[in-house]
Image (cartoon, rainbow, N blue to C red; front, side):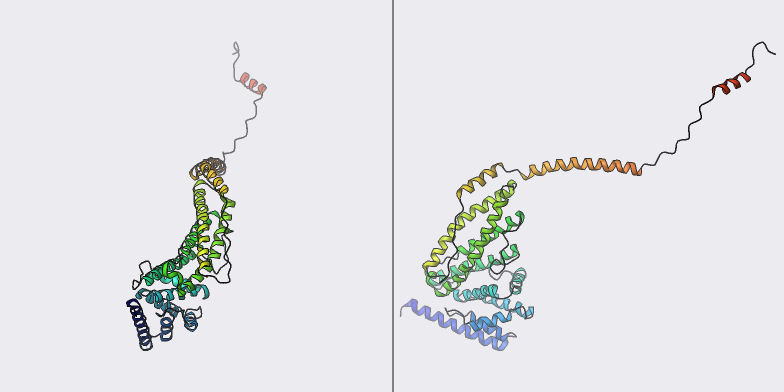
Length: 368
């Protein structure tokens, strides 16, 4: 037997010993004995899929019917398994358990794992993970990092959209411009992580990786549909956008074109290694370049938000002055004290009487 084969056999033997030791410790020391044993056996060092009975035992422990403390412990145990291992198979099988739980268990598990990440750090952050025990292990651990990044982005996308793009009804066709220009980039980033799950080297033909890749590829349909629906929605609103929003929309549209090409290439790789047996991948249609030209032309002439706000400000100020003048007049009219009633006019003097009194009060000359 060559040196490489001997080393590989030794690693498998040591991995089996570790698994057995961990199971033994769980039987003696753990308050969650059955759950700990199920986790170890579902994520052991053997490069074969986990037995379904162990997966079901984990899913039972994280269901909505179980106490939240039990769910939190299960997430902690999976997190500990990921953080301590340097074996790509253990890491991959742990990620597959989490991925299946996100797809198959009720939404409370997703909420719990997000809350756990906020307080203790994201358990799916494996950017520094590596298994350098062999060339094959190096290729496989590179794919594990890509897979973990995809699952991490999947949770982030849920945080932005407020729903799960795989399990919930899609909503991008009906959202308004503000939400659309936030949600579409998040979906595109998720699709970017998915496309990066294309295996390389020895990882291409590894059965365990192919099994995980099948789950990833199956989710591309809903993601791409959500992006397509959102893009149509965005196009309907585009020629009424201000320049700031139009520039964002133009970037989204350009990236959609690029990702459509890359997704087609990703599907070709999947077909070449028999991923998605019996399933038809979604048909990718590239958006017309002529429409892109029309969008670019509109952006050059689109109104600036500041100018629009300035014009609106002038109108608002003018309206405010009018309103204030009217209201001020009303206030003056309502609050100014009414003038005191004018005295009735004096009666017009009678000339005859006045003349008589004058005569009586005046002495004629020459009379004594």
